[in-house]
Every structure is written in C-alpha cells, then in structure tokens.
Image (cartoon, rainbow, N blue to C red; front, side, top):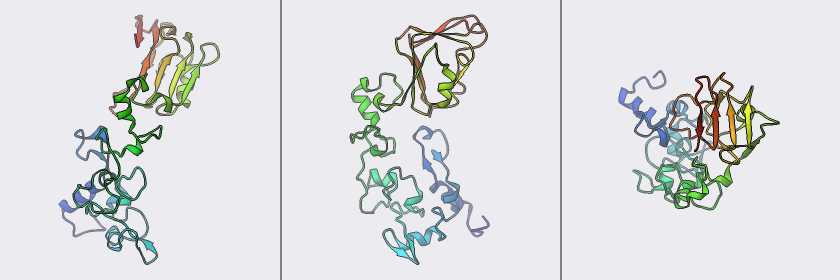
Amino acid sequence: MSKYPTWTYQQVRERVLNSVRPVPALKDKTATGGVVNAVAALGDCNVNGREDENDIACGGGNTCGGIPGSYDSNANGTPDDCQWDCNANGIHDPCDIDCQVTGCNVSGCGTSDDCDQNGVPDDCEDCDGNGTGDACEIEANPELDMDWNRIIDTCQNVLHVSSEYGDIQSVIDTAEDGDAIVLAAGTYRGFGNKNLNFHGKALTIRCESIGDCEIDCEHAGRGFLLGTYDPRISSVIYGVKVENCAGGSASSAGD
C-alpha cells in the first residue's frame, strides 16, 4: 500500500488476483484457484527495475531505455513473462491455449493444445515428448500407466530395494516426485522398513512380484505413515503385504 497509497481496495485486490499462478488441483477449492505471486503484485514482477505498466507500454519485442518490453496478451495489467508460462515462449498459458481469452491478441496465441482441459499446455505435460499430453495418452491407453499414478511408466525413474541389502526408508528419502520404488521379493523388517514416511512426495511403491513382498512391523509400528490427504499428491502402494502392525492386524496394498 505504501507504493500505491491512492489505490482502492478493489484495485489492490485486482492486482493480487492478477498475480496468481493457476493450480488445477486448487480450482474451486480456494479463492484464488492457485498460488499468489507477491513479487508480481508489487508492480515490478520481472524485477528489471521498471514498473510493469511501463514494460507493457514499451511492448513485447521492443526495447526501451535498454530494457526489453513485455506483452500483456490478456490486458490484465501484468506482463506475460510474469504470469504462468510453463513452456517459456513469452505467452502466458491461457493465451497459449486459446486466442479467445479476453484481450489475447499477440502473435503466437492459440498454438498449444490442452487435451485434458486443465489449463496447462500439453507440451508442458508431455514426458515422452511425442506431442500428446500424458493424461490423454493414459486415458487412450491405460497400459501406459500400470501403477495408476498418472505418470507414463517409461518416464519414471525406478529405484530398486532388496530385503537383504537395503531398507525402504533410505530409498524413499533419496527419491523424487514421480519415482517408482520396486521391492525385490522377500520380507522387510527392522529399522527403515516400517513407519515408512513419504515426506509429501508422490511416489509409487510396488513389489516386483505381486504378493511376494512383506513388511513385518514386529508389533512395533505401522507399515506406512501417509499423513494428511493432499489432492495434489498422488502416491500408489500395491502388491505389498503388511503384517504384525502395532495393533496386531495384517493388511495388504494392491490385492
């Protein structure tokens, strides 16, 4: 407010909302439907030393005072290079997908497909680089995603664990979002093989031979600690049996 002391509440609200990066999982769940970019809301979102309105006045493809100008393809007062532009082509994603977006009038708009209509251009969700969005590939051919984690199997990094030479938790700790952890057949017990915590990562844990992997909690813990449900995180556990939990009951994942 100190930077724009004469602004009304409505102007401040509009500026903040214009800075939002849409997140499909948050649509209709939060007021913004995405993540607020506080830097963008302050008026020099690309931190080039010139206020956004002057960047826009200079215009995309132009240079004014030695500083490149910016497009504002949807005429919302925020330079396109500060709005979500997953493929870094200088056109923010809604205009990249649809030239009919209000005020979207720059050259190159509408050149990206969005087959699953989630607001993200398919070329940003195409792990195998074949020109088709992953979600639509999986819908057309479910066998591409045999562990049901919404990632094409050939795009996953696969980490292997042996009951004789490793523990599951240490592999989870080094894994990254989207990785698949494959357990060799056998019984897993002791430190690092119970109370398994994904730490918020989207992972797949499966047995290389369904039904032949067992986690023995030895009546001193649980198999997995999955925490609070988060719709943005998709984890899968299957083909793994969990026995002798603290409560004494047996369970399995992926029967």
